[in-house]
Length: 234
Image (cartoon, rainbow, N blue to C red; front, side, top):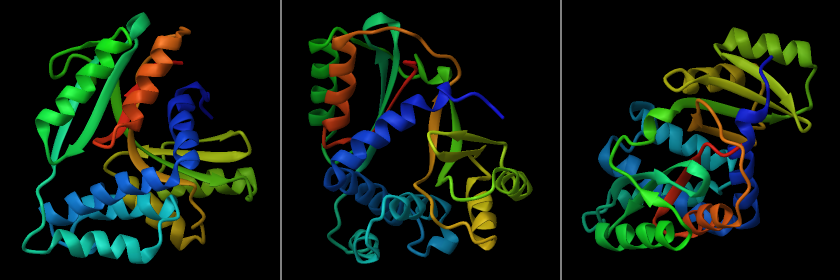
């Protein structure tokens, strides 16, 4: 089994999500909307939409809200949302990647740039930090199963690794096998996912303490146009 330090970022982010569930729902609704608008509204034919639905259900979003987001995306007067990624460094050389969904690129760019400037960070060019991250699938379930059984079950389902941490199991997959692993586990009766999403993990981490850095990450996460913030702070 692997070590646990690589999961610090996603645990931090989920903690903030649980403290602001309404705001997190708004971000997931955007992901559902974009996935349904740019692809087939039937999740069976749209892997991106299936990913968004998996994330929504893991966050305990009501089914009617999921369906409403998909329906709105199909309306003739539905607005366009643009996917934008910003990359840069925070205090201490911490790499930060910011994924946004917005209807106004100028507004989003201004707010993201202002946050970096205010808290001692620097925006970089496309690709300046993304190479420091890898895209993976992650499934987190409560520690309600026998460790040996769930480990064997996860590997048989196609997972890469399983870690027991903080009284929960963390299952890692490849990004392109995430849905298959999740569906295989569901067929085995595993459905109580606390986290179910494809995310980015840093390939290496930096150990540092900085109030400015904490403020920068928190400010970015609180922006309405920002859907995800990834960093390599340990």
